[in-house]
Image 1 (cartoon, rainbow, N blue to C red):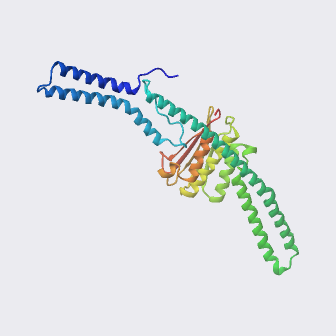
Image 2: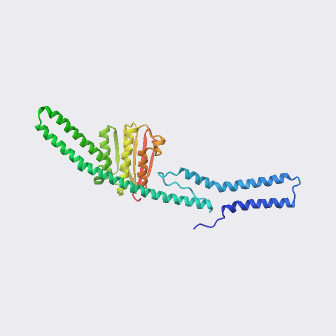
Image 3: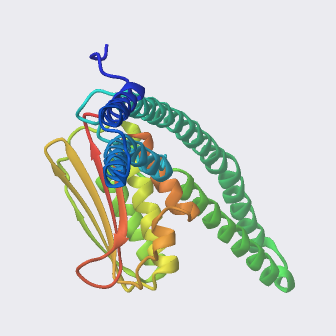
Length: 317
């Protein structure tokens, strides 16, 4: 329930009517008859009064319009302060802020459902790859190994090459499974999963990945742990692919109920367009952060060359 206020129409009409009435009274008592300066002064006063009133009336509307143009669904929390005095503009501002609250809540819940369904599908595909294709390929490699022992000498080389190709395919399947399903996250927890990720990527790329992972973290929901892992995975992958980095540092710390993940590299640094979220991978990170109410910052490092990705999750969200 809003307090009563004087409508904008009357706040503009009454001063103007007062000035016009005063001018009419002056002209009635003292006809112009050459008093042009008095008439000009009255008109100037009307212009000044209108300028002040209109400026006070439209300034909050201009701020509201500016905010409407800057609102980004992936950067929630920005609101416009309501005018101190009750007015139509104040009511409109409050309604707009409440609308943003509803939209952000609905978008967060919608993203959480979508990402949960996506992860469930990834898990299902990973299980099928591991249990069906992976095992079948492994069995085929064993059969080829046995065949190699009984094969004539002139075809043994071909059997060995075929077996090696199958074993390489087994490793490819395992790599896809590790990408689809975080290795060790469910069984061993987030720090162990990040350790496994860093070790594997170092072995594959030769890039040094430094880890500083706090073990005694507050209890997080499964969705929150998954978002932390996926953001770390995407950040490290981006640094390897695009940053020309020689070293990457992953930090995971807790401060009370807050858990902070930081990924830094010493590469060329991210440009403003990609940092704003137009890149597919970065947009995916922002959507994941939004789905669990986390705060994500992607920027150039201030202490040297490279990029810094920081994600803060509250265990109470």
